[in-house]
Image 1 (cartoon, rainbow, N blue to C red):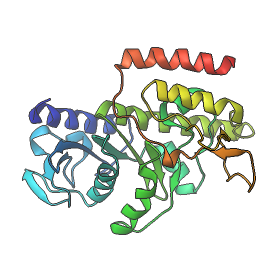
Image 2: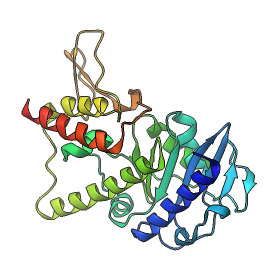
Image 3: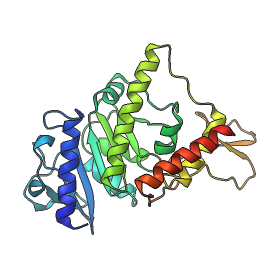
Length: 272
C-alpha cells in the first residue's frame, strides 16, 4: 500500500473510533509502521471525527516529527513501545471504549477466559497494565505486556490494541469492549464463570492454527503443559503455560479464511 493509501486508512479508522463512541474530545490515537524507523500517526489536539489523511504526522523511533502537517501526540511513546517490542506489529490503536475503560478505571480485571471465541482471537485474557505516570514510566509499564498479548487495559486510562494491520488492531479493540460488556452483565447475574482449564490448551492451539498466536509450548522436560493463574509447585509434573514467553505469528489469513478456521477449531476443541 502506498503512503497515501495508508494515510487514508489511518484517517478512516480514526473516524470509526469516534463513530463507535470509543473516543471523545481529543482522546485516542492511531498509528502505523511506515518502515525504516518511520511511523504515520494521527495528530494531537484533533477530534478523531475530524482527522484527515493530509493532516497526519510522521515520527521517527524517538517520537520526533520528521514529516507531515500535524504535531505528534503526547502518548506517542506508548505506540512506539509496542512497535519496538513487536516486529510483527504494524498498527496500534489507543482508545477509551466506555465499558472496557470502566473496568480499567475501577481496577476490575478482565483477564479471565470466559468466551471460547475470544481465547482464539485474543489469547487467555486481557491483562490490566498497572497505572503509571504518563511518559517513560507508562512506557516501561506497558513494555512487559507487549510480547505476550495483543490488547491490554491501561489502569486508570483506557485500552490499547495492536496487530499486523489496522483492521486487526481495530477488531481486537472491538472484541475487548464486547468482552467487557459481557463480563458486566455476567457480574450482575452472579459473576463470570471461567472456561474449564482443560479447554484452554486446545483453544490456544486453535489460536495458533489460525495464525493469531502461539500454541502452548511443548516441554523438553516431558512435563505436561497447562494453563493456570499461579506457578506450578516445586516438584510438580506440570509446567504452567506463560503467554508472555510465547512467540507471536506475523501473518494472518484472509478474514473469510480466518472466520472459518476459528469456527472449525473451536468446535473441535470443545468436543474433546
